Image (cartoon, rainbow, N blue to C red):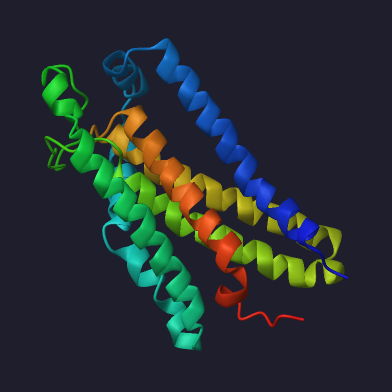
Length: 224
């Protein structure tokens, strides 16, 4: 017999690391001024990291949206709609805050002689807070984590210990992929930590709230 407890348990492998990261971000933001913190987080660059983060960051510009359409291939329209609604709601909140606050990006507040820059990256000037890329990364992987958690819930009683451990690794990997995407914006000096902290929060909470209230519609569950 499967229960919501199974779903909450497996999703916690994604959610708890996120909460730990969020608290750590708040602590760092409390301790350091944002410019000093940005330079501290960017104190070490390598060619390999430059190439990786430059490429990985672009996933939030269109590839993740294409991946969100894949359920249509199996006529799982509701899953694509779930992602689309999550992205629209979270993205709208992010855009509203950007327009309302209109904060400057690192290149405007840090001397370009000391600002860590990755070659080939076109630095933006304004609308820094919050990060749209961080929001998009967390929307995509949080939606995926929720759907994986539901899929696991339906099959948990048939999973061996080895398969359960594999599922835990999958969920934690999803969190890491989201976190790396968000951090790439700081690494590329497109955003401050405060920007990705709030962008990630919107991207995490949005899908969770939508899934909570729309679960029966999203998963086409019948009311018993």
